[in-house]
Amino acid sequence: MKRLERYLMPAHFADFAAYAANVVRYYNTTAGFKDSNGVTHVHSATNPTPIAWWGIFNEPNINGLSATEYVNLLQTWWCRPCRPPGRWFP
Image (cartoon, rainbow, N blue to C red; front, side, top):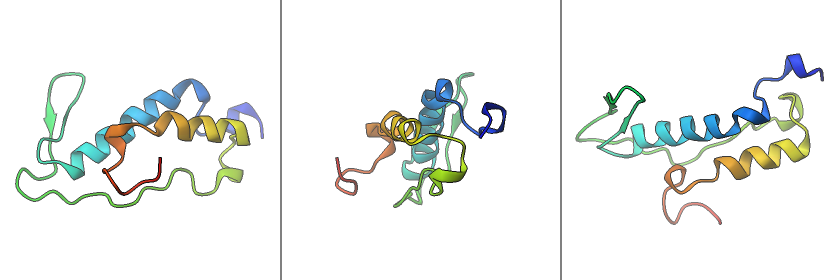
């Protein structure tokens, strides 16, 4: 696949990981997250609806990433704020 057809370039894996962490904070906590302007975003201050499962590019062969890049994306995304304790393998 040509580089122009790619959906997510390796230089932006950390951006994707930060986005994923904020989405999880938005749904899984009553505190939410603050954006770069200091605005707090909360799904529900009293009733969070936790994300119990998350798939990252479940079709790795059609997203334009090589196998090595896909593994690097998963390793970049694999951050503590993104995973509920006790529900994910290390």
